[in-house]
Amino acid sequence: MTGKKDINIFKKITKLENKGYELSNTQKIILTTDGSVTTILDVLNGEIAIKTIVQRFEKANSKIAKFLDIEENEEVNYRVVLMHKDNKPLIHAVSYIPIKKLENEFREDLIKADTPIGRILRKYNIESRREIENIGIEPKNQELTKLFNSEIELLTREYVIIRDNEKLIWIKETFPLNYFTK
Image 1 (cartoon, rainbow, N blue to C red):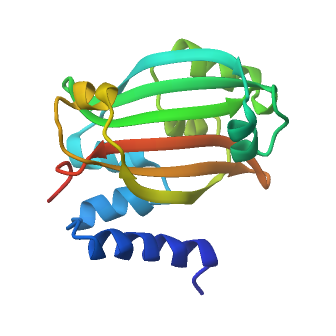
Image 2 (tube, rainbow, N blue to C red; image 1 turned 120 degrees about the horizontal axis):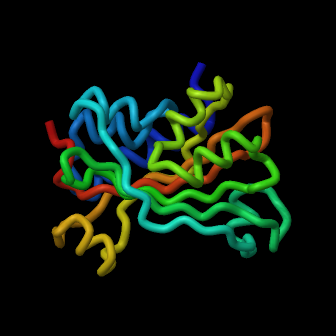
């Protein structure tokens, strides 16, 4: 049986295609997977790496608090990374994680290392699930245009990682429309 969120995901893909965006099967898999994108990228490219661009602790604004079902001004880890292979950017990812929901070891790995969140979850055998909240086209911005060295439109998805029926992590992943076309 297909859940309501799954139907909405399929509708979002269909909506993009009806607007003239021709999505490859690989792009559709990356946009809709409820598993680890890191694993998919590893399979497609060989083991990938990440480069942390920004990482800091900050107070959750109302938007982030709503995304994570936490109180406004609660401390979160804000992290921006670039998944890459041989210095070729693959996916830009932004995440917010409520600090109070993290075990010390998880928090230390998150802060000290350029390790994808999926690999940290696997390292600590953290059972979780992902729920896709949005799929679409990202408006062009100077940062991503420069990062990907491309003026092409960007595909994006937003999702939450849920553990023990609580939102543990909110993530937004973005990549150029001309990536993963085979």
